[in-house]
Structure formats: C-alpha cells, structure tokens
Length: 345
Image 1 (tube, helix red, strand yellow):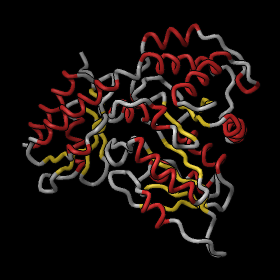
Image 2 (spheres, one colour; image 1 turned 60 degrees about the vertical axis):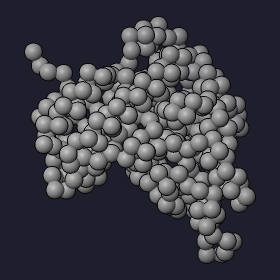
Image 3 (cartoon, one colour; image 1 turned 120 degrees about the vertical axis):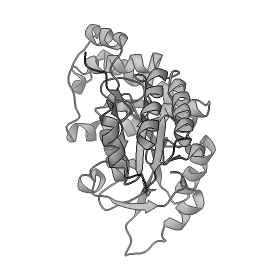
Image 4 (cartoon, helix red, strand yellow; image 1 turned 135 degrees about the vertical axis):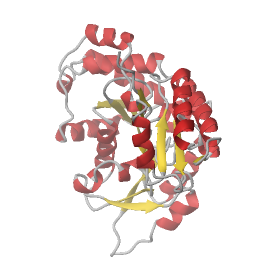
C-alpha cells in the first residue's frame, strides 16, 4: 500500500470537504456575467458582510483580485507603494506593471509591516519628474515574513498617513481570517481602515477555487468591469461559489487549530540541530525554518524530506517553509518532526 504523502507546502493544497462537494452538486446557478447566478450573489453578499464592506466580487484567484484592485484604483503611469517583500510584487508575475501599467515603489518593512513614518519618507514631493502616487498596498498576514500580522491599530495608522497624500489603501488579505483569528479580532476590524480588501477562499478556508474582492458599491461596480476585461467573467460559477459559502460559514474558526499546530512544530524544530525558527514571528500557520549552511541548503532538505514522503517548500537558499492546514494534523506533525530529527542529525 502506497504511503500517504504529508503535504506541508502550502494551505492551497487543501481538498474540499464533503459538505462543500455536496453544496457544489446542489448549487442553484445562472449566468453570472449578466448577474443571474443566485449562489454567486449569496456568496458576495455574505463575504461583504463578513469584512464590513458594502459590496464584494467573486474572482478566480488572489492574484486576479489584487490585479483588479490595482486596475480599479489607479491609472497607467501611477506609483503604487508596498512593502519590499509583498506577494503582489514578488509572486504575481509583474501583473501590476505589465497589465495595469503602474510603477511599484518598495518600502522596507519590519516583519512585513510598514510604519507610517516609513511611508511618509517614501512619498516624494510634487515634482514634474515623479509619477503620481495613488495607492498603498499592505499584506495581512504577510507570506514572506512567515505569516506575520498587522494589528487593527497598525493598519489604521498607516492608512491615515496614506490619506494625508490622497492615496487609496488596498489590503492583500489572502490569509486575512488567519490574521484575525491570531489576534482574536473580527476580520471587519482589520478591513475597516482600507478602501478595498482581497481574501482567499482556497487557502486555509479549504474551498477548491476562488477569492473575494470587497469595497464600496461604486468600487465593486468598476472592479466588475475590469474583471470582465481580464477574462474573469464566469458563467454558472455558482458551483464554485457554493463551496465558498461553506468556507465562510464553517471553516473560519478552525484556523486556530492550524496556528496551534504550527507553533508546536516551530517549537519542536527549534530544538533540532542545524535548524532555527524565529518563534517570535510565528503568529499564524506558516513556519519558516533556517537551515545551517554547515548542514546544507534548503533545497537539499526539501529533497531529503521528499524521500520520507513529506512535502515542503524551499523559501530561499537556507529557508524551508512548512504550512499547516486542515488536511494535516498532530500525527502528521509528529512524523515531520521525527523525520527532521533523523535527517538533521
């Protein structure tokens, strides 16, 4: 019998639950491009209510949601400011430049968080030579920083600084519910200071496909047209939306289990020779482990784990990422730790 692979690469690998599959099978559908899919409408209404915004839009992915947000907030040649390791800059194929025609301006952050002073210093004065800054993008939780979080106060403070110069604020909240659960607050508290927010249904919330972009009614009206332009208009998409409704109704609170398991893994890895974990940064479901160069590289460790039927991601020359989610549990975590003890020693 083939051994089950334990997949810690990402929370994107989650499988839909039986409840999701049943909901998809039974979904009432119509043509969403002409506004006739009732399940899409139900999902969008529920999502907007969850994040405290007037309206929401179902998009195929987080990358598409972020791109539509940038297209809606800006015009070609504008400057968009963001943290230097932001997902929207690092992992989205340069879409903001290639398709929206905007210029990214990177701001070094602390664990993925930009301070108001850092933003003010990055904003240049009026000058005929400079592009117009129109948008600030923040990421919560922050992927490359290891799932670190912005507090409501930090978001509000940087949003105030952005609006001093007339900037809109967009939040890449791919794992927004993780950020909220980690600090025992409601997602609407995190979304309140920003003009638009994107969050994924297909990561820790377990749905097979889709993300949500939310904002004002007028913003979503314009965003819907941009989504259509870039090929995101879908027809009987209620089949997908049905799983998203289950995600929002029944999968958010269990994220705390993923956080608890990630912390257990992080603490265990910290005691293993040749591995280091910054436990002070371990707030959600992402564990970043630094590999001692004396032992080898992240790529070497990932390949060694694969021989143990354990999947992980190399996240840099010396960094390995492990992500917890609904489809890995305590037994799986123990197998991971035991394998690492053998391999590292």
